[in-house]
Image (cartoon, rainbow over all chains, first blue to last red; front, side):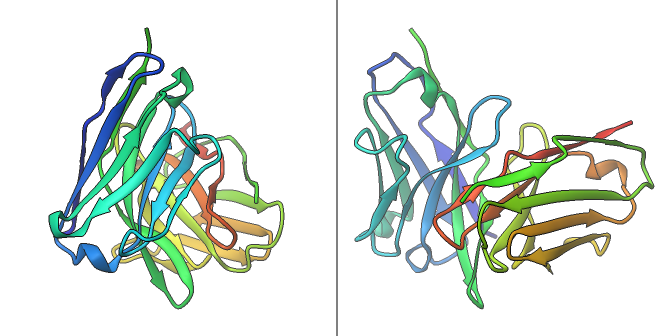
Length: 121
Length: 105
């Protein structure tokens, strides 16, 4: 069965760094675009970053551009999010998600359970 | 594209009908998705392509609409349906609505 398992969250100081990982199993990882979506406490969902099948194209939300970078290692079936220059407003649960495209419809059919990042001094 | 969900909170009793709205600031064609999220859990796919139920989703959930106005209807609320519902568009970039909480009255 499909599984997405995030890790790497924790407490970081403002200006600090964290690296999140998302271990994928149960599907051919290299066949799917992958995403990071975050949710601040009590708030809605926010797209953070996305990456295409082979990692050659990466997209980041304006709110994280230049500080946070998505990457993937297909042989290791793992998605990453390198988070630098962290700010308090980056505090959120970070989910990885697998995107499916069916008849022109794009949607996330599987999500990880999320990993909490807290940025605080 | 901004997605506006209304109402923010819907207070209903089990067995009642729930009607949730998602309005887009510009047309997203039929590229509208609905997710359900319970506390401490990841979102769960309900509806894609505005009106297609995902695998395993009960028939009491239905989606409709196109362009800028979309509706998620739960025909008769079950206890497990009380949750937060998010809409998402992928027609131009990717954005989510602010969510609608369906709570027990």
